[in-house]
Picture (tube, rainbow, N blue to C red):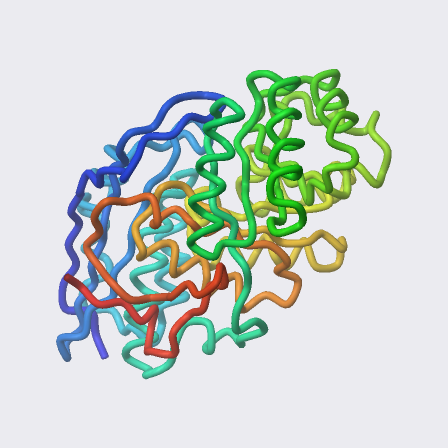
Length: 354
């Protein structure tokens, strides 16, 4: 079955409510979409929302790349050779993970639909459901408690609290959450590189009894070496995010014993194939997998979920990016019940174009 046509388009997706992280306040997000149509009319869809401050690629660049003359390479190609096509595109669009991700996801989706199998079952399903965290941005104690209460009423069981501006206040927020909700919530923290070593130690010491499950990327990547001054049991709870971009950085981190957890985002590593490369490095290094996202369409969130469920050492999900959107171009893909995410069994990514 050959690829008949391809097309790229962009859509600015409004958030239901703005939120603040250590770097900025976010009100809306632009996603770039890429469709592949086969001779039989089946369509595969990919999406990208790269974060330029992390991977050095903007949505504008992604959109331009997906409209470039090189993309014509895909037309007339056999979808059964989709892994080869992904490789060729990755070689051409080196260091452009957003572009790679959109192509990778669309080809996976089209191939799964052609074969009549879900992407996760093509690779081998190791998980059928997992709890996902939902995110609380940087705000005061009262705002933090109020938003957590909303998630409590909706049945969620895991919070990821954004921190990184004021370690003292951050610690107070976590302590108050634990006092208010007891053990109902698993609590994770994402400092988005906002701490130095002293602030990280301060936060860790003050929340020692609050049972924080993990801390995501506490410091800037160029300060990673300072993490070696921390005890092994503390580093085991740290998740590499901004420091982890692709298989090359995964290999370096695993050799240095800096982090006990890898936060894999398809927008950083170029899609499902790149994610599996990182996962392969993590397995023998006894590094757990934590699957994250930006504010993304259901398209790429579902792709990340399929990749996560196909890896036996996946331990954490943070795939709430599409929940923040006020609109999308697809439905389906997954469902959430009582805080658990489930991927459906439909071919490809199981998406329905709206």
